[in-house]
Length: 453
Image 1 (cartoon, rainbow, N blue to C red):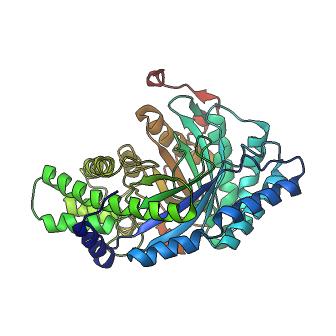
Image 2: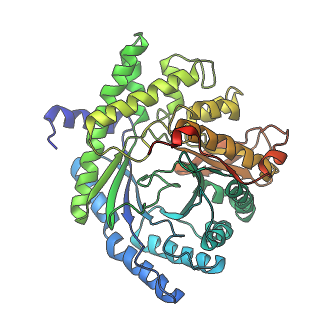
Image 3: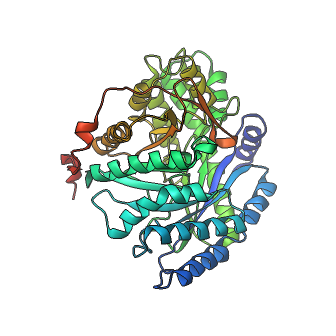
């Protein structure tokens, strides 16, 4: 790739003034060759392989940071969905494997290791059932492990039995980590149409179609887009779209440059750049503030969904123009706890779960980092997950739910994790029951659009 001097100057300006950073460089490592009949041998193979490929990951990222003056906020590792190489383990052995993974992540110095995961959109293996039983305990007993379960796809339909099981494990995770505001739930996400190359936690994993080792990068930059929209002044929406596209083009180019440099130091292939606007709780680094700069009085006003759709579309178009290696999720994230503008809108009573659900139909991912009362029934959580899965199913897009039934908390309380995970006001949920619907179980069939072969 060739970079013009002006591009480099623009990137320096974005870094110094407009909160631009590379959100994550994620090293994907295949564990498919680590299975053994002896659990201790398997654990040692896993530990040794992560150390082999990951021992210099933080060092290499920091060297690239220093060279270009661009912050890389997080250094992470993703692994093969753990149920695939270790389908023969029982729930207690999966917990032991999680502890091994956590020790490896600590020893290489990464923020998180993701991929304690299962793909069950069409049904369960015996090992996947055992893994789901293990997930709450694994998340409670480790610091760096992140987990995900894919419960649906446009090709397969929605596995309602899996959604019921996942809702129960979310409740259990909330209880087991109640002394930390149920933080275990912040490390777990349930997907429909999950991508195999997503570098963002908690949903990252190293897909089975990926090479032995690969380096993926996730960018950020809501503050850069916000400043560009403000500088544009009172222009029409088509012009705003062009402003966003030009800004994202530069961000994507910078992100791919950083990713390729880190991959080269590792001597591994570069995978994708995930062109996602990922907010933080920092002032001026908010998707919510972007939507307000576009003209809505507050997030949740009528017109919010249209503004978000335009933002997401412009992000994707610019990313595809800037790079031939765009992948992952790529769009605008709307996590409540990690976005000060979203937090403020919830506190003012302007943003409900129902409005957030509508917004997820046009943006990346879905209901992300939302806190609900701790006594919310598992059947209600299952209904929330099923609704979000249906949006992904029908629209052939990735959707997800990262919900925190905060143990002992009620509407008006907050969960506060500090740092990147931020603070989430506990939101109200409808008390009318969906139990009779979700407890039917079975599988919601794939839609007609699945027949594309």
